[in-house]
Length: 178
Length: 257
Image (cartoon, rainbow over the protein chains, first blue to last red):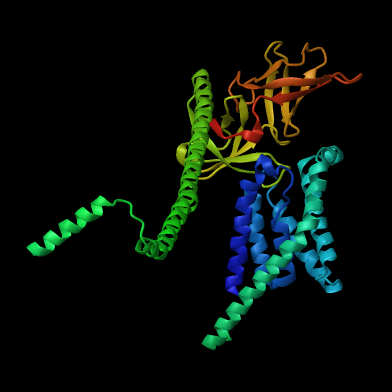
């Protein structure tokens, strides 16, 4: 399980680096949403609470350090996405593609709203949001379209890694590690 | 041996008396051998054609591939030269800027951008190890870029002037009307607290006043792009378009003093 933990951490870090370099090029201007959101949703659905929270806390802190916003914004957003999705998964069938699509779209939209509130005084928030409406809408739609695919890819990776690690454990006869 | 030689000479002499004699033996031999000759010749021709039309084409293809490779290399070289040329132009402008501003400055490269589109910060490849510290002004060839808000050993975070939390004390170069320049969108800033009676025009240049203690006086910031005078209130609403294009920002100068 530790391998899986490190994998998600490294995956998250690579995504973070990409988000602050390649994906911020004028070529992709306003298209790419925060790609860590699908990862947070995935961890919320599949990872054990402690390890999942640890990964999102580390990623949240790093994103906060890289961002020019208030420290703790990303951390807060990721944490509440983690908790909300965990609770939603108890009441809804989260494996449904449409549900996942709506979920990730909503998370991206929610993140933008939080940023908007934090970036401007409340009475100017609407004005700011209207100025940023096009990229926000574009990113939300893009997230809704691509989010389930990312979740599916992460799911496959997760299954493969789990199978491999459980196979290795069976070979060594060491079941206690798990 | 001498006898054989003599017989040979005689026979040759007889034969020489009747040149181009076409006998049945000739026909038989011709009928038996020539088809093979023809076959061999055709095969040779076929091989020759094959060589010329196929193997030669393969060679041509290889030549073509080689030339394509060379062309691609040349294009890459050209692109590199162009890139070097552009970098040289940018650096020359920076150097000119450096000589214009009487302060000790450190050149730096932009290595990272803010992960969200809501906040406007960049990372540069110079940090406390190079003498960079919080609050230092950052400029580019166009004008003011922002200020350092955090620095580690090798890197520093720069808050751009277009960020909403950025504020610079500035004045209009022509009329000396003062105000505070705040970030608004990625293309413009708001020039606040410019009094109504101030005579300002579109395209007027806005410079730093030096009164905020962060930016030296006289650094170019931008030009006035929009002015509106509300029917009530003490101030005008002014928008300023920065000189620096933040979407293509690559090299900057940190003012160390």
